[in-house]
Image 1 (cartoon, one colour):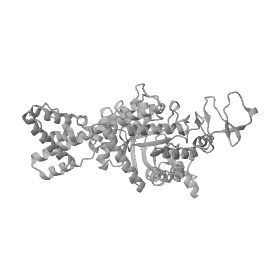
Image 2 (cartoon, one colour; image 1 turned 90 degrees about the horizontal axis):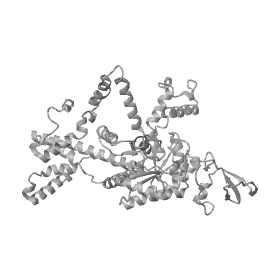
Image 3 (spheres, helix red, strand yellow; image 1 turned 180 degrees about the vertical axis):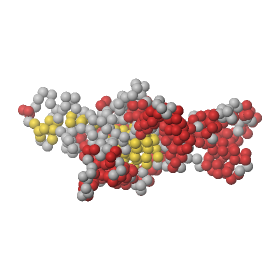
Image 4 (cartoon, one colour; image 1 turned 90 degrees about the vertical axis):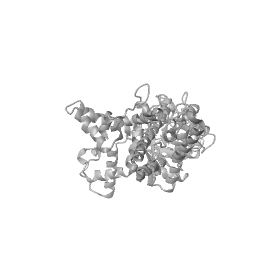
Length: 531
């Protein structure tokens, strides 16, 4: 017996026990409301989605073709529409997640107004967005189930038993819009205690997976900007521990931690690591510093020096009081960071790169997997990359390596429209199309996400509407470019009243007041024009 039928039976028993005072209560209506409110708390969501993510991770370990994906969403409505679209087109949400981008929280959700991605926004705006996203996803469940309930009532009224049975089966086996979220905690917003406190808020809001990076909290930069400063491993591991303790305190024992390294693009450190003996973790971190050998006579007032193998080494110290790493050490530092994180509590990795190049990612992952054979990545398919230019350059370089004639192309100008229909452009586009598949098969990428896509889609769609509506097209710009497309593509929001919950409210009014209910969905509701 389904949960729906069990709820009808259980409420019927409660009604009988309560006697005549509950005569107005319909057990099936209660069962419907319970089905529409499956998740009562954020912790229920966190546990449900953690179980899904762990299952997906195990399935990827067995078969790298079953990778997972997400898009970054900056508002609950955007996340809701994404999942509605996935269910409509792909019929299932399996292997599709949400990503919460710290960049978009800073740019779009701060009370201070638009901010750069430097951890300057309010800490709790992150957990607030997680809660908002899941509120909208739960409402999507309620709306879709309400449509099924309405259709079931209609089939029963028409005596169509086969249709009613099919609809009941859809209700009994309903797939929720609630999916795992990978949530960006930046560099932890302070010391380990601050990281722990914020992680708790995020988990309580529903997060099953928290991504944390090894930058200095008070110097944090966007992953694709300059001026990034990393911390010694001991500092970062303390924050990983803080997140794990938060998961365990709240009972989400299988919560997922993604350890991000920004070392590939970070040439600076704020601290020299503590080291007690040659070859320990602190010594390995310090070994990447840009140093010059000096004698005691060479030392200046306030110099910091290292003793390594009997030599005095003076690290390069900038006027900012930061220390500089040697050029060309980024990949080696990423490998060390990744191995260290996985050996000390992290579940997956994030390596922030400067370009989308499967070979580059694979080179680092191969080194990591020599120590951690099942190492897996969450990878940022970033809008900060010029994908067209990068892949056309990769195609150009491949052509050169193969001995093909490239005289028709200017490598520095490959973004040009004049190349759009060329063989090189077609090869590049095919590599872009298969990037996720190739990266998962060859470079250990379990999860592909686009951090900021809906920031860009909102801007693009608004521009397309504005340029016509405020010019010669007038209303036609909206009707032709938006509404007509909504109707023909079956976009649920064309019935915006329904999407906002009007029909759900009508159903509740009928539950509560019966025939006396004043409902919005009558014959004069203009939403009927879109039936």
